[in-house]
Every structure is written in C-alpha cells, then in structure tokens.
Length: 281
Image (tube, rainbow, N blue to C red; front, side):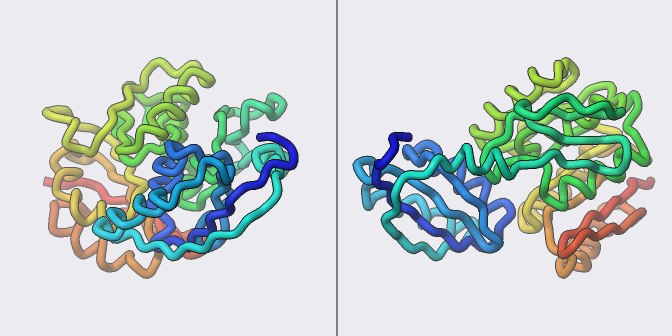
C-alpha cells in the first residue's frame, strides 16, 4: 500500500457471521481489496479508490440465495498499514497446557503441539471458539491411527492438529479457493504429509469412510449434508459438529439422532456449541 493513498472503506454487517465472513473475504480478495478488519457483527474492507467499481456490490446479491445477508456502508479513508497493525495485535492461541497455534512471524514456543500458520486477517487464525472447542476435545481423545475427514477445513488447522495427534490419514475439504491456497501453505509450514486437500463439498469423497469426522461450518450446511456425514462415518466412529450457535443445538440434535447417531458430548464456549455424536448399529 502506498503512503497518503486514498482508500474506500466498505463496512459490512454480515448475518450469519459463519461462514459469511470467510465466503466474503474469499470473494473480495479476488476484487483487489487490500485489507480486512473483523468486527463483532461483520467486516471492514479496504480498496484503493482507483480500483473501486460499483459493480463490486453485485457480489452480495447471490449470497442472499445462500442465506447470507449483508448490509453495507461506504466511506473514504486515508492509508493505513492495516496488515501491519493487525499483525501487531495478533497473539498466539493457547489451548490448554499442551497446544498452541501461532503465526510464522512469532518465535518458536516449547510445547507438546505447536501449530504454525500463515494467518490472513480474520481468516482461519485459530481464535474462533468453534475451532478451539474441537481442538480441546481432540486433545482429550486423540485420533491415533484413525482416518479423519475435516469438512469446512478453512486454513487447515484442525487437519494439522489431527496429524500431530497421530491420525493415520486426513482428507481436508473446503469449497473456498482461498482456503485451499492458505491450507496448503500451512501444511508445508507444519511439514504435514498425511493430509490431502479437496476443493468442493462432501460429494468429492466417494466410497471412503472415516473413524472421525470434523465439521466446522454453518448450521444450514450441516442440516443439508447430515445424511452424507452419517454414510461416511464408520461404526463406532465419532463426528464433531460445530460452527453454530448454542441456540441451534436442539434443531441439529433432532436431525442427527435420526441417522443412527447418539449424542455423546455437548460443549459450549461463549455463544458457540460443539456436539459430538457416535455411530451405532
């Protein structure tokens, strides 16, 4: 970014935030936006005035068909090094006493499980409660020698954690190209060699089944794809469902329990939930 350059600040109010934020960042990143800042209810996006086109706003309309609603406001601002400011305030994420997620610009931390990522602003940093909820439970019950499917994998943090905890093989799935590039970058940083990334939905996985399935996505996607998850899960296997508010728990439990899956565990962090189900005969 050039000093004294004038930028357009596009302020977005997004509902639901997950997966709305990640989808928006992926789309706007392709439209020459240079900075993103997360807010409690959405996102601020920055683009040089000479790169702005009113047609950019057209990207919002198809999202409404997917149930993602956006209110927007435009302002003019002077240059700031948003990425530098963001990095200064980005801190490592400690999960319990044995795991940390840190950036590649942080110093090495002596701990049992160190996950190194090249973070993007607001995108897959490990700070989100749903990511932490799943990792906390994986640390308690490591997927040693198990085949793992990570759905809605984002930047690949849960896949990397699974490998470090002894998983036999991991398939990582996301529909976002930005996620794919970021995840592959993070796999290299962690010298991961047991993870395969697939761009698409669960339909890209054909005949394989898994001992453990991790799902960290929007409730509407979970409800839509729940039957497919059950088919991909081995008998006595466990599925970890997160990415939704605690207020949506009962709706999801009701759906999942129709698929030969028993609720094994329920965890909450702030307003977010994790549900763990086990498959029975």
